[in-house]
Length: 189
Image (cartoon, rainbow, N blue to C red; front, side, top):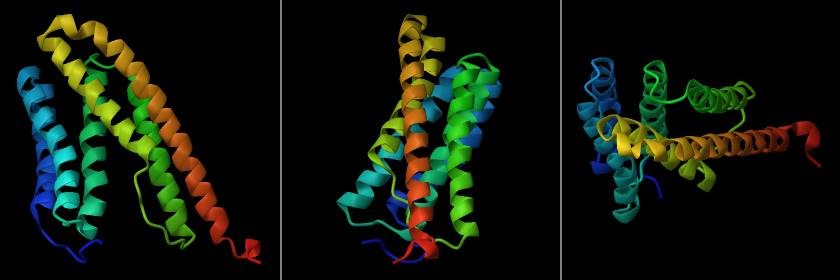
């Protein structure tokens, strides 16, 4: 059960940390301080798993957390993929796939809101795997700058991330169409 309102608890503070860490991460990338960027990104990535774990373990799920967590993920990962693609550390095609999926999801949410369709956002298992793959792709790409021996592991991670991101986008499209179709009064018996 989610706590109502804007409760600030440990999981929500970790999510806020991830949001606030994103500009710092990007500044380090722009300055080509890849070691510091890797450190900030790693801490932010750890908070991504830790906030959900704490919320479930201590029954601290909140409405605020349910909305902030995906925003924090999108902010961090979209910023990372754009910046790393510009610097040539992640293939630009991968950044396009990642960002296109997120835009597709946002357009779907906007459509549902436009048609006044009530829905609850629940991350799917494929979406959770996608986020993990995207975090791994960014992490390995940054790590490969510091440790070139890691470079061979980046390409398979990029392809896996592209595949999972595409599957997740298709899954959310399917779910969105089903929600929209189910809400159509013409289809009611």
